[in-house]
Amino acid sequence: MSFWEKLRKPCSLRGGAKQISVDAVIPLFAIPTLAVIAAQAFLWTLFIFLATPILVYYLHHNFLRFLLRTKFFLMWTITSVLFLMIIFEVSVVPLLEILPEENLIFIVCVVGGIWCGYETKLKADCGTQESALIQGLELGEGSGELCTTCRRRAPSRAYHCRLCQTCILNREYHCRWLDCCIGSSNLRWYLFCLFFSAFAFIYGSNLTMTSVCHPFILIGTILLPDDCSDVYYELDIALCFVSSLYSLLVGMVLLCYFLYHLWLIYLGTTSNERRLLLAESPYDHEMVKNVSRLFCCKT
Ligand SMILES: [Zn+2]
Ligand SMILES: [Zn+2]
Image (cartoon, rainbow, N blue to C red):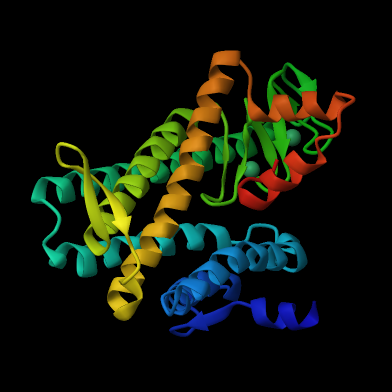
């Protein structure tokens, strides 16, 4: 812990004008390094894809969770998006297998995803600031139940977030990958963000795979990869292949989250309320809880 404390001490840049903590810088180096290692051979790809979630979980469990608001996961998101975008535009597009309109659709979805993600975070931060302001003005006053943590009266469907240090109306969870709480103030933007990002990741992955692997025609201009056995002969082609696998995995997870939230809206509840309901139920949901903790969001 003392080693980590030393490490995470903010290092000053340009005479202390800006402060960046070490945990936020790790993804900047980790993602390109892991991608290059994974691009060496198929077994390396398999190893990196299995080892990285375990490594991130280990890092989170032993170090990151002791920091109140680590930027590690947000930086992981930003670095991943930038890295995949650069690989696509620099290595995949020059292969001339992609139509200009396919590239345009991809770029529009990426920009849409980034914009909605930015709005999600902006709306969450505004909500938190407003709550903090009200909290300072009317401690223990107002209507609703008294929150035992921030000692403020909150509306009936508001739940306290330990990381945001305030109560969030219709709180879903604290999304580590965007470093903000998802609640009624930003759920709409979050859903758009999930939809655009899921589409961009899966579509980008399909375009990349069908460019570097031997493709076959599914319908019209929609292709699927067929034979990917010779992608490891050149490093840049291998990097494209690895990034497309990563992109596909992330896209599938985001799609699942999007569908999960649509289902919750259909049920008229939130994931936080569902979690509380599950905690009261006699069945053991320990495995579900552990998996959700590992993959996304702090409940
Ligand atoms: Zn509270
Ligand atoms: Zn939060």
